Length: 294
Image (cartoon, rainbow, N blue to C red; front, side):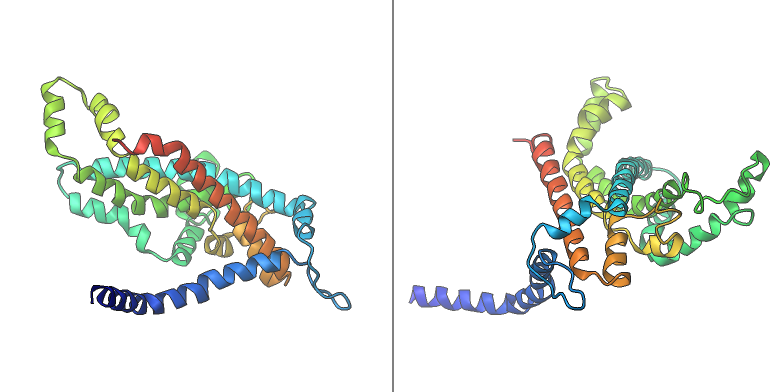
């Protein structure tokens, strides 16, 4: 009787999750398998059908200067975006965690960029960056930089795009830091004050170690976000000028939907997923010891 009841419960449980499993398999697992298979085949051309050649597309990547430029741009973008976003998010969380007038309004102001669509954000900043007309140009006009084309110059286009991403994402990560700060027991601060610990010492020795689990979570998500930017590039620069803002995901979009080389785009996607997987594994492997306390 007990076995029959257990079996019935198991069947009922699987039936309940079956729709979600089917959707996950149809829209996640099966496309992943298809991508891997396509990435291991050559691009079909008239008179030459696609052939199984596991190294062909990856050899093309080695010889592709545009791919190397996109990968380098993405690495530089991530190296600047991740620490900048996390630092700003933590500073904002510390600021709005205190008792101060208008704290609710300040939290709303910090979080508002997060809820705006990236297309709208990109168009807003496109106006800001307009030479001689936008607010940035007007503010810098007395210094002789009012007519500088921030998105049209190869030296400033990628930093300008990075600033937009930091502005938009920092408020989202601030929420996680703020939740972690508010979950800390109040008696920790009281005990530190009784011991004569200053604010900086208390933050460095108490607050920051307790924030490490949240920091790891934000670090992983910020790393993923740094490699999946595309809509902002479409609106602002289209990867220019001279591929200065060409990021990996936008290059995959170009190869797949503009050059119609789906197999090469699939191979590029495999590289992107492999890079994200390796970065995430290193993050968990290196930081796990500092995050979990026993």
